[in-house]
Amino acid sequence: MKLELLHQPDSAIAKFHMDPQEELLAEAGAMVAMSSHINVSTTLRKGKGGGVLGGLKRMVAGESLFISVFRSGSSPAEIYLAPKLMGDILPYQLSGTELVIQSTSYLASTPGVQVDLGFTGFKSLFSGESIFWLTANGSGLVMLNAFGSIYEIDVDGEYVVDTGHIVAFERTLDYSITKANKSWAGAFFGGEGFVCQFRGRGKVFCQTHNPGAFGRQVGGKLPPRA
Amino acid sequence: MKYDIRYKPSFATLFLTLQPGEQIFAEAGAMASMSGKLSMNTTFFGGLIPGLLKAFLGGESLFLNEFSNKTQSPQEIVLTQSNIGDITQIQLNGREICLQPGAYIAHTKGTKVELQWAGFASWFAGEGLFKLKLSGKGMIFFGAYGGLSAVEVQDSFVVDNGHLVAYEPGIKMNIGLSGGMLGSITSGEGFINRLEGHGKIYLQSRSIDGLVRFLRPKLR
Image (cartoon, rainbow over the protein chains, first blue to last red):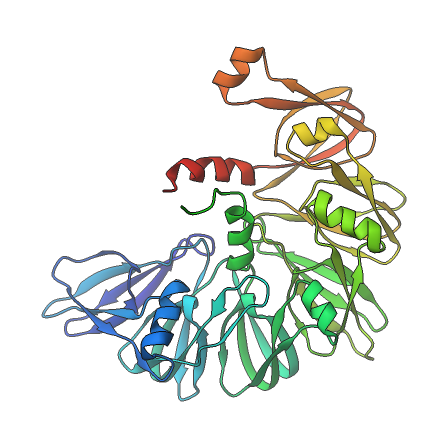
């Protein structure tokens, strides 16, 4: 399989050249175009963060519980995958280290990667939106997408990321979700809400823009849903 | 203080390095990520009452976060805006600038931030009853939805509603129709903002209201 990334960073789209008998998994709805002989099927995500209730909550949060599986079959094929929001795509080569992915940042992965529903996250105190996580194990390629550009931080020590800006992070890091401020009043009024506090060594991938914040800015001016 | 605005113009993001003893003040919610060694402190935006006024009338958050480096080594912080678009920087050096609601991102020490009455003309233009006036010797950062263009206004200039991001205090606003009642309705320009005076203005190439007007009829 060969990967080409086009139109980075603002309108990134991933183009895969598949060899015969290859397989690619992607977030349901990510396929933009593909060779007509590609065989498509749908499976349900597996993992501990599921369950009927968890599944429903995730669907309300805009995350699909379904994964599309694309198989090239007997001849080479091409497929284009893209996320919904404007922004960049990052290919991450997985080899042993577990990667925790903010669920809306998952775009696609190769079959050697096992992607499971992770812990059910938490609800933001301010927006009421929930953040969910996926865990990726095994070896292969994981495609991540972001709202805005993606910057990589090589954490060595302590690092803080607003939860709305996390794309993914390596599980070699210790992390805890805390309030950004020492005082509760400060956390509540400071607008930063919850942050993820990382400790140790490993990589964190951040998105320059917070989809929730932009959504609230535009959504706040739209008429209420009937 | 070292700063670098990366991913211009669509996803402009501010990467700052604070030297020991330095601090930056930022709008609540502007912090994307930072070194775990920086201290964060939430304060009212210019005192409690002005802060309340700003929040309800100025479109800015009631609170301001102060990030300070109390360690002995440089520390990094990343600040951004909720809009996708460009970010620019101004070194005030005694100059003054007025910011429209939502444009403000951060300022350094030595900057005075005040809430000022912008007038009904401004409100009609969809720009809010109040504006933020920044003065002093510090550095300020503000952002836009879309690209930013600086224009030097001499005498008078016309700007469409929702595209004016910042202007120097020498500029006065007058609200008007773009060309007769019928013309205004049919041209889609609606109210326009007739600026008078001398000074620099900053325009954004897109407006959130424009996006909202596009989306609104499509909702069901």
